[in-house]
Image (tube, rainbow, N blue to C red; front, side, top):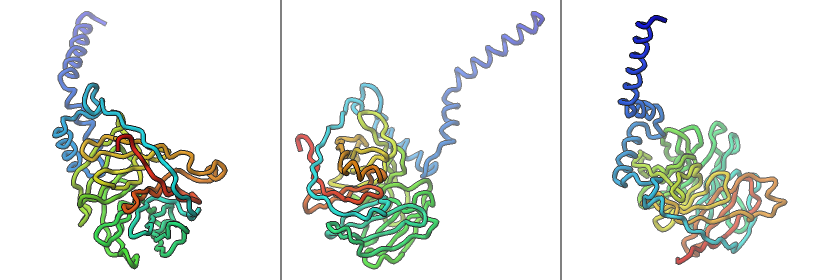
Length: 301
């Protein structure tokens, strides 16, 4: 290599180094464009605005979110009752003394009305074999049932389980609950998505964190008194989420509910419903032969 060649090569390397040092924002922006979530560009823009309004503090060392530590609650079993061991529970809610349940698996997904203390299925509607049932919510006398990968939210009449409408959405459907005039949805990620209860249109998203770190795999949801309880997929904990900050403020260990002999043959904990009259929760899991009525207490509450 001649001296001229070496000079040209050296100059070229210097130019490249200068270009990379001046354009990291461009590279980062390009990378983010390729990772739009279920709400598309509109959702990403909304999340950016929301993060800006919050000061984008979640997970930043020394920030208020980082300093907030979730308290540990206590779970006490009040009652234990039969539950269909063939029900792959995906969504659960309480209404007028009855449980409404969404079950999953292709070819086996259903919508059910269940008598809580006997486990008797009083009414059942099967989904198309091409659909995998997921989260369930009740709004204005209508049940809204998510599907896992089909991007379809099914709207059912509460009394007759007859189909009324259907809404579309992007991405996966996991958990669903209703509160404060909104539907709140999880998709297995670290975020909750808030949607219009009339047409399921996207409104905003909220990133969820536990002890200052993003909390992924949010699953079945239950709205109670301005906060959202969630199952975390493949985890034995229940978490309570502050909808103002997205921070988990209470963690409850729900392990050990099932007898070890029964636990060997079932899938994960999933399904949480709240009875406002007693304040108790009803929890179960996928293929669990038992459902539990529990009391949850928290320090200083």
